[in-house]
Each structure stands twice: as C-alpha cells, then as structure tokens.
Amino acid sequence: MPLRVATRRSAADSVDVPLLVLALRKNPSLPADLAALDAKLGGTLSRTVGRRDFRGGRDEVLHVSGSAGAANPQRVLLVGLGEPSDARGALRRAASLAARQARKLGVSALAWYDGDRTADAVEAVTVGLLTGAWEYADLKTPPPADDRRAELESAIVLSDDEAAVDAVERGTAIGEGMALARRLSMMPGNLCTPSYLADTARDIAARHNLQVTVLGRAEMEQEKMGSFLCVAQGTPQDPKLIVLEYKRGPSGTKPIALVGKGLCFDSGGISIKPAQGMEAMKFDMCGAAGVLGALEAIARLQLPVNVVGLIGSTTNMPSGTAVNPGDVVRSHLGKTIEVINTDAEGRLVLADVLSFARRFEPSAVVDAATLTGACVIALGHTASGVFGTDDALVADVLAAGKRAGEPGWHLPLFDEYKDLIKSDVADIKNTGGRPAGASTAAMFLKEFAEGFPWVHMDIAGTAYSDSDLGYIPKGPTGVPVGTFIELVRGRAR
Image (tube, rainbow, N blue to C red; front, top):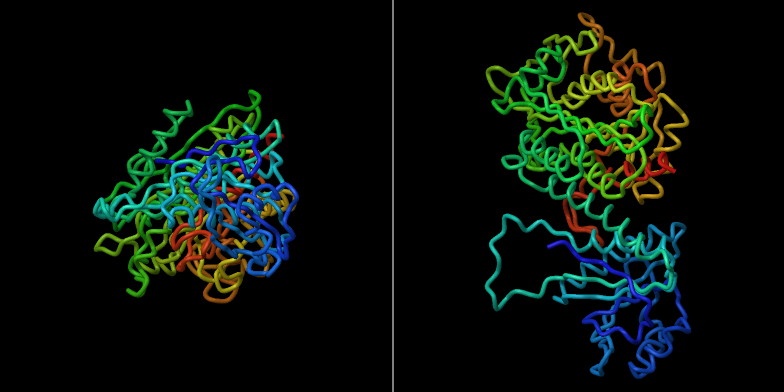
C-alpha cells in the first residue's frame, strides 16, 4: 500500500504519533518552536544538542525516547540536513532517510518537522517520504506473523502554509511516478518484458485518458526499422515501440518528446558480456521506466503542456538468428550502420526511435539511456552525462536535473568524434572503441536526431546503485523521472 501523506497546522509537541521526525541543520541550536516539546521530554532535546550528541551532519540520525503522555510523540528521530546548498534536495534526502528508519522501527505513522514549513519544502519532503517508504517485496515470502513489523502507512508534514495541501498532492504525484519507475526497474527480466512495459503504458493511458500506440515486430518491419530490429533478431520476445501521448497543452502546440531505452535484459548478444554482474542488466530499461514514471506523474499533475513519450523495448540475446559483428543494417532514417559490437545495442534501438519521433514534430526531444560504461568511468555514480545539439535545451535539462536532485554534467560532441565512428562499408558504425566512449555513442545518436533540438542523457551511472546509499536502498534510484518532470514543468509555466 502506498504511503499516505497529509499536512497539518500543528505544533510539534501536540502530535500523537508513533514517531516524530525533527530535521535540523548542521551544528543546530534548538528552535524556539520546539521548546514546548523539549519541556515535555524533560529537556532531552536541549541536552542532546548542547552536548553535541547530535550535530546535524548530512544523513546523521539519532533516535531518542518520546513521552508516554497523551497527544505526545512516542518516539523522536533527529535527522541531519548538513549545510546544504540545495535546501529542497537536502529535505528530500533527509525525508527519504527518515521514512527508511521508520520502516525499520516498525512504526505505522510519523510526523515531520523541519522549521521551514513552506509549500516548496512540503513538496520536497513528500517526495522524499515516498522515496524512502518504497520497497520491492512483490516476490518475497512474507515473514511469520510474529516476526512482522507494522508497515509505514501514513505521514503528516507540519506546515502553516495555506498552499501545503496542493504541495502534498504535487509531491505525491512525483513520488508515485518515481515509485512506478523503480518498481519496473527492479522487476526481473522474465517478468518485466517488452510486452509488460506495453501493458503498463496501456494502463497509464486508460487511467489518465492518454493516447497509446504499440508497434510490434511486424509493424516495425513495415516502418523499415532495421536498426532497432537487428537487436531483436536473437530473441523470441516481440519487440515493442511504445508511444504515449499526453495532450493537455494548447491545441497545435508542438509536444516535447521524452525517449527511453528499454532493454529489458541485455546479455550483449553475440558480443556477450562477462557472467559476473550480468544479472544487473535487467536495469538496462531504466530509461524506459523513466519515461513511464514521468508520464504517470505529469498526468497526475495535469500539467498544461503536450508531451509524447517514446520507448524502444526488446531484449538483446545471442542465438542462431542474432545479429553478428560486421553485419550492416539499414535504419529507419535510411542510413546504413555497420554493427561492430552487438553489445552497443541501445544506440541501435534509439536511432530508429529518434527517427520515428520526427512525425510528432516535437519542439524538443530528450532521451535517457543506460548507454555506456564509459560515462560511469567519466562521471561515476554522481551525475548523468548530458549531450545535445541545442545549448538552450541543454541548459534546461541541466537546470531541471538540479531542481530534481538528479545532477547532470555537460559533455562534448566535438566534430572530431565523428571520425571515430566512420565505417569502411556503411554510412556509420555503432562504436568508436574505448576513447571518448560516451561521446562517440552520443555522436552516433546525433546522426539520427534530425529536425529538432535534441539532448541525450547517459544515465548508466545514476539509474541504479550497486550498494545501499543510506537514504535509498541498493537498486533503482528513480533517475531520470525527476529530471523529465521538472523539464516539462518548466515548459508548462
């Protein structure tokens, strides 16, 4: 059951909840509006802060006992905000950490206090609480009844802002979009198939009155999508090109197109990957999950803008029918491609999806893909690589990522990189080797992004984590849902 978040005008000392969360900055002094609560707790808070038992560092937590009296919190959790340059990002992170701690404690409800209490803060906290409360337990056998802890079911954000109720609704919309993307990403590849992604798109369309179109292998053959289809040659699963159209903007306004790579499992094909860690290749569809999660949130937010989401989904498998290194295929745009490495498959799928996007006459196209290990080497797991043909759109994407807490970094598309992907037998080849691997992959995509401003986000290092990060568990992070949402919100203003 999703976490229910509400807002209330209330003093921190008068909420009767199993857990009260107090978010404080680094080296805090006790806020004046917590004096009454401190008195009810026998001075515990002031002593804790005075002795510097709690210093408010980022991700610092301290659990103290509450009060047994009526209308008092039963437990208090102090969470550190650090010294943030991004206040909203710090609140999201701290709220996510608090929700995770609440789940570990087995409390069914919590209240949140941060001293800000503005609508913007409430939205950020709501997103964070939903992020931290999320888990993927669909395939696990429940523990025995005696071992089960209470589920975190509700949260109250303390705020005096009259706009706080709307802020909770916005935060919930964003949080639910991220939850959808994370669930799809976490599902194993035998369950989250291209057909399942198509069914998910149909479900979103039915609930929010969107238009959905799904092309299978036969339809893509008619469209002459040889680049996309060559990746799907080795799998019996039907590949899917999924299109979701959200039309809430002025009639005739060109849409912004969001494009996602949806490789539900990537073995590497004939250029097969090493066995170690290959199970993580179920995450090669995080770009597609991001598009679906963003459309879910955008529809809930009812933003007055036109958006089209496009997803190219298949699996990349070795078999007797799989595409071979050295094969040449013809793309939807008409350009021929020499396949040097069958594990550079995402760009082959996206090439035809980007070409297909032209029929919607988009005002801008932004794609997201777990595209290259080279981007992980360049930027680690902190920032997504951002490439583009339009400086204004690149700036918009970077700004949207900053607002969403999903930082990106602008990487180059120098003309010289095109020399690395020249082919001896075709118009272009699908990989230029190890040097500048993220940039040559983006340069390949640029060849098919004709007729519109375009940005590519390489999210290979940011879409999922191999370790528990404290504020979120090991697994999918939700990137790029927040960036997509903030980009579209910026266009809707």
